[in-house]
Image (cartoon, rainbow, N blue to C red):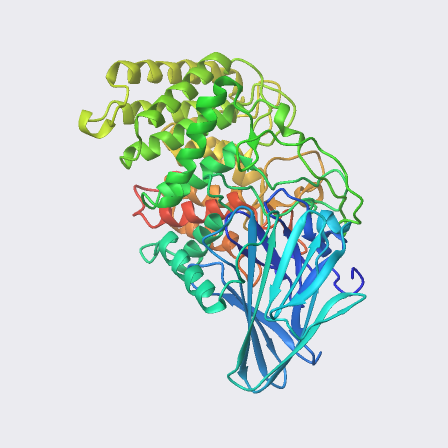
Length: 594
C-alpha cells in the first residue's frame, strides 16, 4: 500500500473534519490520514506517514489532472478530475458528529461525460498494525473489524476482497452519482447504515448553522473558510486541536516534528479572540466552556495542553512508521510538564473579550478570577514561553499578562447590568494594579536601543513582541512599541514574510521557515501604527501561502514556496480570521512607522 499511495507535498491535501476527528485527502483521491475514533487515536489510514491503510476513489483513466474546492462555509470538499470527461467526488465527515463513530461520506458524480472510477478500501487500525478481519457481506454492506474498531461499508456491495483490501469499480453515465458510506466505531454499530441523502442533508444543515457569514470582512471567502477550519478542528467539548496531524516536519531534520492532535490553551485563546473580533459566535462559547472547566479544575497548575476531553497528554513515543519525508514520527507530547505564563495571560484576555460581548456567566468570571490569582502567584517564576523553549523570564509572557489584566479590569469596571455576576470596581482596581506591577518589572527587558528584547539575558528581538502592539497593551506610539516593530521589520522579515526570531548568524531561512502567524501579527501591528497600506500588503502576502484547499501550516519555506509542519495549523487560520476582522475596521491616525 505504501508504494501505491506515496505522500504528496502538503499544499495538495484537503481536510474534511467534523470536530471529533479529521481526514486528509490527496490529489490521488486517497485518504492518507485519519485517526479514529478521536483526534489522538491511532491512525486507520496512515499513508501520509508511511503507514498502511488507505481509502481511495479515483478515475481509472490515468490521463487526468486534479483539482478541487470547498463548498462555501463548510469542510465539504469536492475532488475533481478532468480528462476525457469530468468526474467529481463530494467528500465529508458526517455531522452532527458522534465521538465514538466516524461516518465518511463520498459521493462520486459524473459531471461531464461518463465516469469510470476505481475504489479501494484497506482499513488498518493501530497505525497500520491491524488488518481487516471478519469480513462479511450482508444486506448490501461489508462489515468487519480492524483491531478494536468495527466498520461497515455501504454502497459497495459489488466490491471484491483481495490482497490489497476491498476493491470496486464504479461506472456511471453522465449526470449519474453513486454514494459510498463508511462507518468506523469503537462500539457496536447498531441499526442499519445511514441513508446517504439524509446524511448529506444533515451535514449541510449543520455546517450552515455553525459557520457565520463573513461578508462584512475583507477577504470574506478566506475569512469564512478559516472559521470553518477552526470549527472542524473543535470538539463537542469546546476544545480545539492545534492540528489534525502529527510529525509533519517543520525542517528536514528529525528533531523538529511534533504531535499537535491536542488542545493547547494558548491556541484555544487565539482562536477565541479571533472569533470575538468578529462577533459572539457559537465557536467562542465552546472556547469559554473548555477554558473555564480547565482553569477551575487546575488553577495555577493549568497545563499548557490537554486532550480534547480534558485529560493529560500521553508521553512522547516513536511508533514504527517510516514518517513523512524528512521527519520521524512522534506520538504524544512532552509539553505537559511545562509552565507557560503567557497562556494564563491569553486566557484572561479571552475572558475580557467575551465580557465585552456580554457572554460571561458567573462561573466564567470565577474562572477569570482564578486565572488572575494564578498569574499573581506565578508571574515571577521563569516559564517556557510562547515558543516552548527553556525556562526564562520571557518578556512576551509578562506582556501577555499585562494586556490580559488590563483588558479584564476594564471589562470588570463596566456598567453593573453588563457584568452578569462580574467582580466590580474594587477587584478591577486590584487587577489593574497587578498589571502595573508586571509592567514595571519589565525594565529588565528593554534593549539599549529602546525596544523590547526577549528576556533579561537575551537581547534579540522576537516577533511575539508584536502582540502588545496589536492588543493595545501599550499605546502604539509608545517608544518601546514602535522601536520593536521597526526592529522586527529590519531583522526578522524576508520577501513579505516574518520569522519568529534569529536563531544564529545563519540567514533566517536556513534555520527555520517563516511563521505565518507572525505575518498576520505584523499586518495588525502595521494597522495599529496607522499604516493601512502596509497592513494590507502583509495580510495579502501571508494569506497567499497555502495550496488549492486554502489550508495553512505553521511555517512557510520562503525560498522553496512550500508548506512546512502539521496541517492544518489552527492558530494560523485564527490569525487570518482575526486579521481580516481587525483590518476591516477603519485605520486610525498617521503612520508611526515612517
